[in-house]
Length: 354
Ligand code: HEM
Image (cartoon, rainbow, N blue to C red; front, top):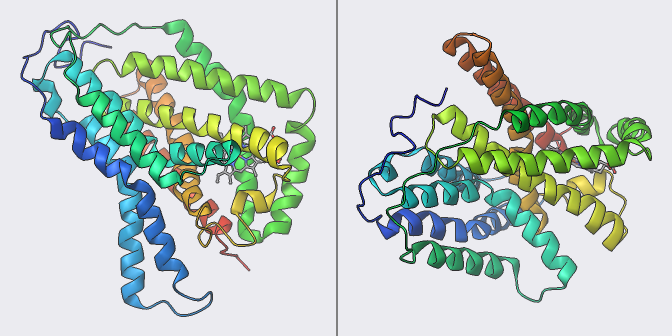
């Protein structure tokens, strides 16, 4: 299954130096990601709640929202692009892994924000974020040695892949309920809380909760190992999506567990119900800190569903299903993921069905 690579893993690619802009353009764009969020927040809060939004503001807010989502999309575009194929192996690898980091920007920014609060940092999150990305850009653009190294061949890792799939099935039981629960946000906080109470009797029980957390941590670290392996070679866009969404989910899950267990329940003593999830009473959109949760949750929900369908596609191909059939199933999963994500986000930002 690995022989489809146009450029063999062993191939020594040309040693043309990589243009610094291939690194700096995406790094600098990602470094201003928080300012896109701030701009959206400023635009939305300049209109009083309940007031009619002028078309100009609506257009501006839409453009800025697109800019927010274009940052992880740029990560995908960079991971899928072919320009680095003409460059040496180390440069290819560097850009591909940078691209994976950029995909994670929305969830990494939440992770950074939660930890800076707990550390009592006086430095604004935006500055910390921008300085870290510029530092990362300097690190990546230094002239490294070993630029002529060949790309190392990927390892099949069948046992780890099977274990990742089995632990994923356990985790799926919780996630299916958890997302179903969040859909009830459309019916209002009370109904959402009632459904959560029912689920909590199971997933917060003294036996289930530790098993769930261990299974999730296993998913994170086994997934990162697999992603490190797969990212060492170029691939088709479906596989790149599987790896990219997996890396995002690894950061998302670590950050989400940190926010729920460490920040809310231990550090701040906050009840992790509706208000914690939605940022109420101010609301996710109107809160200058909370606005970052919008792309974090929206993409998290979309990726958890599409990542599962990416795994299903690989299993289907391995069982002789035609490529077009497997790809159509993946696209069906992407539509379902986008719809569920949209519905949850509408509920969490205040839209009610009745
Ligand atoms: C819109 C998206 C999401 C929101 C708003 C959200 C919100 C929450 C909230 C409020 C809790 C606390 C639950 C409680 O106190 O009973 C929680 C717990 C949790 N969430 Fe999420 N979540 C989202 C998506 C996800 C996803 C995609 C995953 C998995 C990848 C996930 C994994 C977890 C886990 C493992 C817990 C801990 C459960 C426990 O208390 O034992 N969440 N989440």
